[in-house]
Length: 59
Image (cartoon, rainbow, N blue to C red):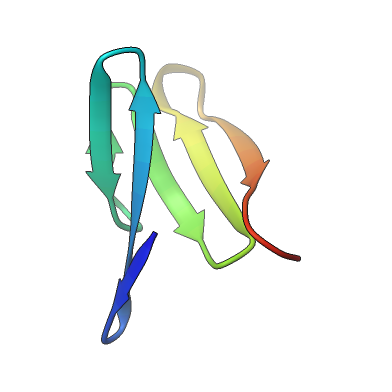
């Protein structure tokens, strides 16, 4: 996770793939990072409009 003025960048990986994401970015053609802060990521699976919250860091 990196923070530049007004923008967070989160680094996710799956197998050999890695993604540098900010809020609103789409990745793997089917997921979108819809919300994020220092304690959680909210990722939406676009085909089903299903959201999942992933805890990260300290709460």
